[in-house]
Image (tube, rainbow, N blue to C red):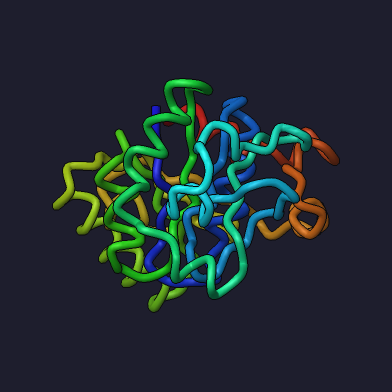
Length: 210
């Protein structure tokens, strides 16, 4: 399975959700934000190298941490050399080797988001309980629908409830409360289950929806 994690607006917690849900599934998380990567880096080849034809996608997966990650480089030159059209094939190769793949998508609605949605079987939409974040997330949901990528669930991040998210998106919603443990784990590039199993419960619920 390939699942895209999208949100429309930046800063809503897509990377945190992707990392933690991948941990719950025992899958690979792919940092597909080619211009502003946020997941932990690796000393080996990264997604920029894969999309430039310099490395194999499977060989670029870093298995040294708590979650297997196909990281993305931070260098502007690497981003310029990358051919996003190779992404669909790269994700398929990782899926064949590892099974479940969570794709941490870029913010916005550009081709950097459209290609993962095209490749994905389904998606998770991440939003915050604000009007602006919700409007952007609805646009991301509309793009997913256009690309025939089904919506598995909505993650309402840093919220104590889902509000009207289930009605607005037409899909199950899971609230992820504000959490110091989640912030601490994220700052170290770890899923929160490594620090506190109880705090991972919302991510386990999202994983079950996939």
